[in-house]
Image (cartoon, rainbow, N blue to C red; front, side):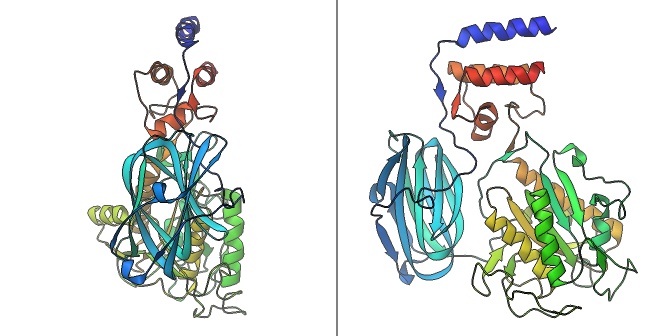
Length: 460
């Protein structure tokens, strides 16, 4: 069988040697924009956007009105928006004829959002905060053809809009990515116990490659003397109901696991609700906890932004809400799009999750908080938790790939090799995710080198 496979591979290798390489114009999943690297200091055109222009059609041609720079065979376009006030906005873009591998950065001073992947013809709505925002578009060629990229509209963020389009890629080749879940107060600590790796809390970790979906689920939560307590106090263990302990432990946990998604849970109303929180504030008016100092230190906890800075959930909240309500669990799942998670350690932990996502957007793709009704029994809460995790995985899977598994069937085999050969011969085209899986050496070209690497994976 091995000899037959080798003969098959040899046939295709000789068939494609000498063919021109087929450039797919890809990009690495993460890089810094030129402005952050101080690699461009030329004049950048600026458009002032008055308050009267907000929520109005703009149709600004970024490519033709921006400044152009060429670096390492890439074309960079720069354009700055000077907004009337420092606020949270939705930027709506329309684009056409964008070559594969193009990307967008949105930069404010020394912070940036991106890279956001662009390809073909589509539209993009991206939530940003700030006042002076510079757009940097990068095309993977000196000859970009006739692409169009327009800023269609700028609007104040709509709190009713729970999910904003976010483009990213997850490489699952090296290890199974981690989804981190945390809980405070019953039933949330008990409903995620089976995902704990702590042998003193859970004798059988069930989160490894959970349900064969390619993700490890890992949980952390406080213990209480009465596991079904009402007035539970501070608790003890991996986490405690304490601002300082929570913050220190959280940063240690995310450093250890580098999660691709974070779902924080806590007890909410004493009812049967499954409340998906949308808003988290870098507030100063916290309720005191149980140990001195009873308020966060520093206060507000996030000194990188102003007090009461608003961060939002990026969980697929509509999908979670609909699936929990459809599961006949007797729960009332809904999205709190206008309120807040309550000024206590619940919101404090929720803020940490979305904070981590916002500063690690290239590696942590979704984060958010769910308040769980205090009357829900442990088994039902566990079932709703697993539904919430599964819908999050469904969302993440849209953007995940494994190197060599071009057809995403979970196996790297001859079928993947045939697809890559057909791409080189020009008889087949790949989607963006498929092209990442095929480009084994991440050089932006699908060619003989990638075929050799796939063959090595199959034979080994």
